[in-house]
Image (cartoon, rainbow, N blue to C red; front, side):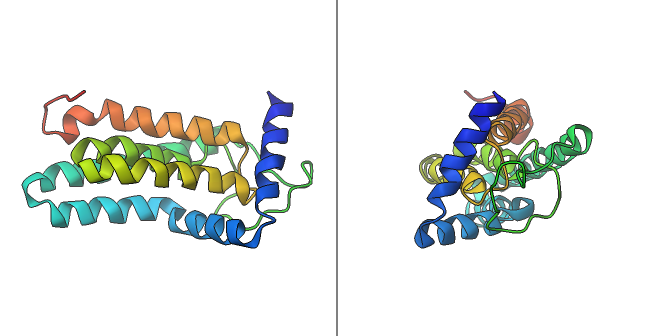
Length: 173
């Protein structure tokens, strides 16, 4: 697993040698810092969809909770970010030293599950944007693929477990 993680990271990080790919990956990474893109999206959904405002706000809270859970796991696991041992020079600065799980992937997956359940537009737009954000973390060289996979699983699980609460006690799907 360790070798595969390093090989995949190296291959994806090589994609960042294209200036356009690097710029897009940096932008996605910056937009996802502390779950900001997903929190803003949830609040926008609450502002626009008055009929389901409460569900949007609870979905936003679930997304924030997933992000906080990933930060807690990072403090326990304490896996160092890719660096000198991989020969990977990161394209962005990070808020912390630990990489497992990816908090960007956690909040992206939580938003995908939560917002996708609330809106047909969310179900079409959020998943590819979330996937791009997850890949961006490897392209910029700050996460191993296993960090991203674990973060996405944590985010999806958090949102799925909270789906009944998000929908006012009604479980969907």
